[in-house]
Length: 607
Image 1 (cartoon, rainbow, N blue to C red):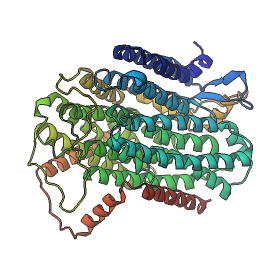
Image 2: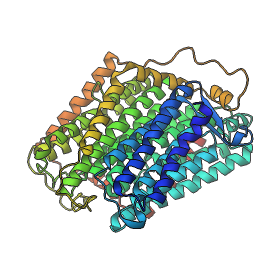
Image 3: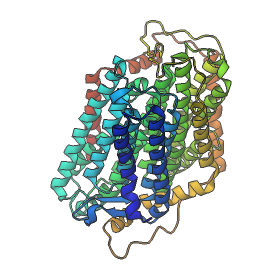
Image 4: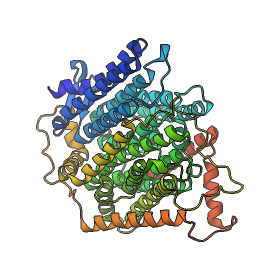
């Protein structure tokens, strides 16, 4: 099958599956809906697996037969196609995981959940494969609309509704900013095709309008990526969303925001009329460092397991942003490997948290202390995922972290590798601490913080109505397979080498433009690709972050360490940070506006 057929199919298959489920789901039994959803998700994986070899030389498809200067183009380079393949794999995992787990309403709404999951998949795959800026905005909003609906799926409970509304309003506000930026760019160049936008923008001098347009477009991407201070919606949405939805949001949706920033910068703004490289590198590296450290700190403070994992996602997004901001093929290689493995690990950890919700109706680390001793195999998987988060070799997360540290170390030899080690160690330690307490009953039962309001995770609305049944096999097999995939990403040199070649293509805007616009004499591929294997330094730093994580977790569960007064400045600073995550929509929008203004100022002062 040709690339011109596979590219539209990659978007059409999940859309068709969603439409069939929406129509036939009312009459099909639950098993029929599961079979239809699984068949659609499997067909998408096969389609994208067939597309992957074509993307090596940039696969393109002109929709409706219209050329790029007139119509919409789908374009798949290896990074975009690989990300779409990751989306498809995780959606298939979620569909299988939900076979006997997730309760669905009967009657008119039967089949709605898998239909929304496939609609979510269509938006994510379309965003990764489009070559048009406005088209990317449309797919981005399709993805967002499906995510809002899935977050508030349990409409009988007011908490998911509140979370979905906050999620929807914050991201809609950011979408208006992005649309305004696209309009400004269109007024300047008269183009929406990414490749043609980059060429036209190169003929203009860089000015304030260009910077403001770039910052506005990035606002929606950074909100979806949950970069600080655009991240406030993420923990609230994860706390109330169904577990299978959390697997997708943390596993791949936020990563698409980071991908969007890199795609828009390299194809549109990396030329003479765009954002100077030093300005982008400085601003987004600072943003990445802030996101990584604040996410790690907030992750450590959580006892609600879904919020804990959500904040660890925020922290890792910071590391991904640093890798992209380096503007080097080696930085993008590290981020690509890291994203692929992190998606599998994070989805596995959320799936295992769903087991706790299924068995005990709670995701509270304190309240579940020792209650899950009977689930030792699940506990072993959870601790394995926590070690993978910490960057333990040979997991792919460890390899991605090592490659990112090496690339960052060439620019900031000490600071940035230290941020990678710190963020990995603290987020891994938080997950280890929770796993040791919940599944093994290690240490005394922790006490609540006096005088502080905490989101505990107790009294959760059950996602199934018959908890007395035995644990469904897919609920443990799916996370085990995902963790095995994370190991394979780190162990198979061919995977990392392919992503290194993909990074070379991704960071070559001239080659992208030539392929999309079908310009004769396509520039040759880069002569060399960045190294993508394990190094002694990478292994040692991975072991260091893992040992630090284990030490932190052990000290926490046994209460070893100094007890600080409630008036100590560190305690007061942490308390202030916790209060900033108030759940108040007005506060979140104010922080979003402040972040947008800060980004504009940071870029304008450097052009």
